[in-house]
Image (cartoon, rainbow, N blue to C red; front, side, top):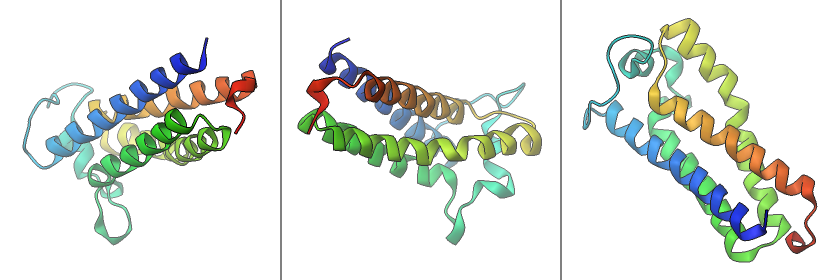
Length: 146
C-alpha cells in the first residue's frame, strides 16, 4: 500500500474518533439522545460512573474531543510533512489513548454494567490507528524517512 493511501486511511480513522468524541460529548451534555437507554449500550449509565472524571473534575466526555483533536493534528502533521518523526508523534498520541482503554473497558463492563456506543467507536478508532501506524513503521518504507 502506498504512503498516501495509508495517510488517508489514518486520517479517516482519526476523524471517526473525533466525530464519535463530539457526539459523545453532545450526548453527555444532553444535546442529543441517540445512545440507547436499554440493553448493553447505555451511555447515560456510563457517563454517571465515578471513574468517568479526570483530575480537576474534567469528565472524560469533555477530554475526548481534545484528545482526538491532538491525534488529528499529529496525523495531519504526518500527512503534510511526510516525516517519520511526525508518524512517531502520532504513535505516541495513540499509545497514550490505548493505555487507557483497558481501564475504561473495566469501568464500562464491571462498574457500569453497560457500554457507551461512542466510547466503543473511539476505542476501535485508537486500536485501528495503532495497527496502521505499527504496520507503516514496520514496513520501513524509505519514503517515510525524514
